[in-house]
Length: 457
Image 1 (cartoon, rainbow, N blue to C red):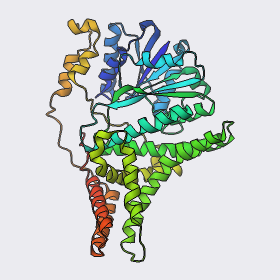
Image 2: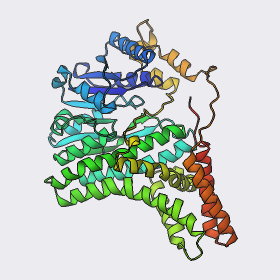
Image 3: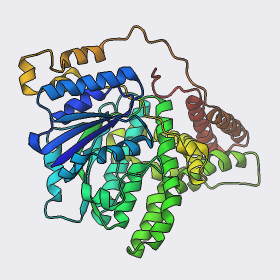
């Protein structure tokens, strides 16, 4: 018995394709129920989603629509509210998909069987794939990071530790494991990481399936990506403050505690952003103005190049983008460092939750392939009109106004510092430093003027 949840909030660009994909999961109809958990505060979006659910109900899908009056706790509050329904006790597993995710029909058949005869297994996590990874330079660079995350971090931790961070979507939980770990909590903006850590401390094991993919979207505008990264880096620091006493007191092996504290929390979320920001954005440019100070070439060139090379190995087709990737990661260290500080010291922006903007990219073929078989040859008024959906999404919008680029003052200030330092380096004939400072300064300038990614209204 599988409960399938689709939490969403004002995501009218993608709700149709996610509902269609989930309703077409290949699983006995009597054994799974779909919950559309709509937290939208826009009445038009609420009506559209409710009508879409009604259409699928009329075509035999077991699907219900839920809307909260009190929208506390963001996504965690939404999921917590849904789990309080009386009928949840009839289900053994819960699969979660964000609004832009489109699981393949065989998703449940490739994930749920792993729970059989494995009572200690709490979570099965699938890999993400991206429908728009080649859309622009920003999405290509994001794809490099996420390929490394899934191919290396998730897969290695799953094999050797039976633990990794839940990605918040495209995963199946044993409901008993959720309940045993305390359920969903609204105390941070990373409810997925929170429940994973608590389940790990309770002894539950996780499996990561690198060969099971679930399609989704990458943010196509820098503003959307920036806000997403702020949440992804401030939340873990919030959680670290809250979980550290529990990790220390927990009766798990010492090496598991060390992995949680130093690798899971500190290395990727604190040490690397701090290293990138302070070294490349502060220390290196300042040494150009102090003749006595000197950084060796291996610090400036070889270590960053090696780190970028290792990150890009899981996505070899992205190798031509290794230099833009290195420069952009250093540029993003400003946002990540700021998020890390706000989360660590519980500043106001640490609790900011902004739903990542979606563009709703999917082809007409994708949408029609999701239609129930009887609908492909015959259309009724109650059937979801997928042809119309595809045409509506692909038609050019005449009413969209041209949007001016945003200005990011911190990035522009750092570009000025780096370009000035590059000029100083040129005068003092420090070749390798000059090229790095010049290109890094240009990278900050492009980001500061919002010239990377697309503008989305």
